[in-house]
Image 1: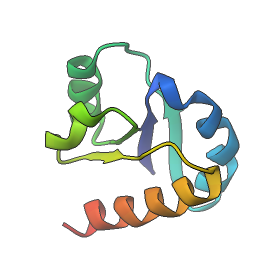
Image 2: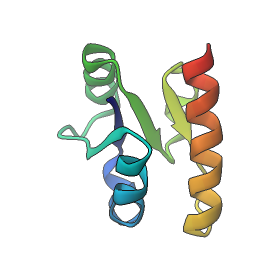
Image 3: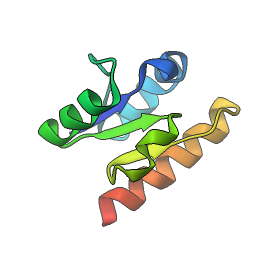
Length: 88
């Protein structure tokens, strides 16, 4: 199972799509850390993908940076980006 780590700012989106991601074989979780560098290191250690709206993560190769929108649109964009990361 691939860990999908949600930033604290996306806690509502996490709750909305948790079951959907579990059905697809992912392991969604909210980050236990607050600062960006800690989240990046944690994602590297567990080989996870970070989902966030923070543009500071654009330089991190295992991050999906979303813009705030309707949850359905964010979900589709997130899945496309996760697929792109996993293919690379």
